[in-house]
Amino acid sequence: MQEKQKKQLKKIVSNGPNGGKNGLFKWLVAIVILLAAGVSVNFTDFFGSDTQNNANTVTSQSGERTSTNEELTAVINDFDGENFDILPKLVKIPVTYERVVDGDTQIVSLNGHNLRVRHLMIDTPESVKEGTSVQPYGKEASNRNDQLFKEANNVYLMLDDGPTTDNYARVLAYLYADDLLIAEQLLLEGLASVRYVNPPNNTLEEAFRAAQKSAQKAELNIWSIEGYVEDNGYFNQVD
Image (cartoon, rainbow, N blue to C red; front, side, top):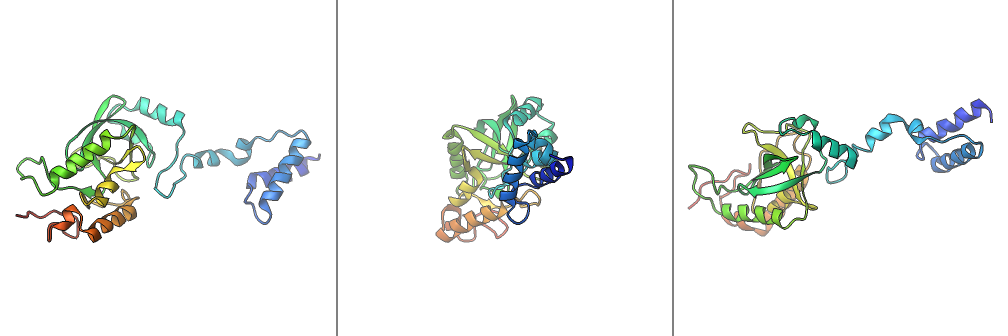
């Protein structure tokens, strides 16, 4: 096989199975011819480092990206409790649940470091805030938050594309109990409102607003009290 022919076939392979009309057929034929001619087919060389990077940044409908176990393990082992910049965004990171603080805040540990984490884009009625009386459904939200964590076999933290911490040094993240997104579940049950939406930390905003709308329509819990929740998610003091 001439070198010119090899280059042409390699170009077809490098374009991938979606490379134009009859792309899959041409791609398979090119691979077969190259292999039959004794030419080693190294897909990493053909597709380059961009393909390898893309494998770790594919975004699913849930907003989640993928990362290899080896990469994630290495990052977790390097985490010192403060270097949040090394943690991947929109990737589920395994953590250990320690305890609940209230309906929207909890303590988890990552590589032995305790982190105070606040659910992104939700607010729940106050139940433990100093100087503030317990608000309706505050205890229920806190207890349900705790229950969802405790029922899980595995707990995961997922950062969004925006700032990792807030002004109170709390980590801002999505938290999962196995495959269940806890903040979304609290919204569905009418125990939380959508609040503090700050792009680009809002990848899952659409899903959250849909969950809230469902609870509002059913007048569940916080939505059963007229005038309790403002349009922006703020909780009014009620008798």
